[in-house]
Image (cartoon, rainbow, N blue to C red; front, top):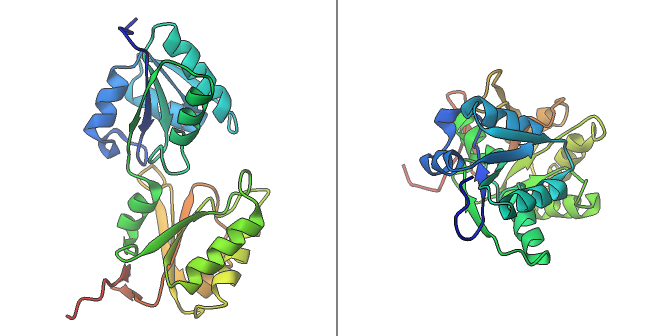
Length: 248
């Protein structure tokens, strides 16, 4: 039992996956934890790093249950870590953890510990695609209606943002990436540089640089991050680079 005084819950970003991809602050936070909980994929990542910890995996779409469990454990006196892949504040557990703690009126400290999000880790693998203004958009419509996602893609494309796409496809959303690319193609050339990265920073990592026209026909999954360049994006030596506008 490590709880002394006010209960503590750490909401920790694991980064891409390996120990060397985590921040020292994230490692220190999890070292302090008696119990670590999270979605099964991320919980197992944490177990590999901390094999002697009490690690409790949860199924997908059990975010509320994870938060309630974390609060119950913290109030019992143990220090809890709630893990997310990447950064917990980017499509992760930070927001829902704070919302639930507030709604329950719990006297707990919730500390958000950032990590390297997929947008940044994937970008480093393919070059420098987000060196200028960019927008991050998830194609998952579990919690966000598709018409809202569609509007955001259209506005980001019209605004000449580089677009970084999370959750590009799944078994139930096989055609969503094609639909997103078709929206971007209304205002961008089919030759616009694009790319995807799968399993960034993990075993089995792979990537491809291509064009927007080609990206629409790719078959990606939830472990992929995709990029659509803007008017300043080019391919240089096999890498995707978005200029900041320097006069070279």
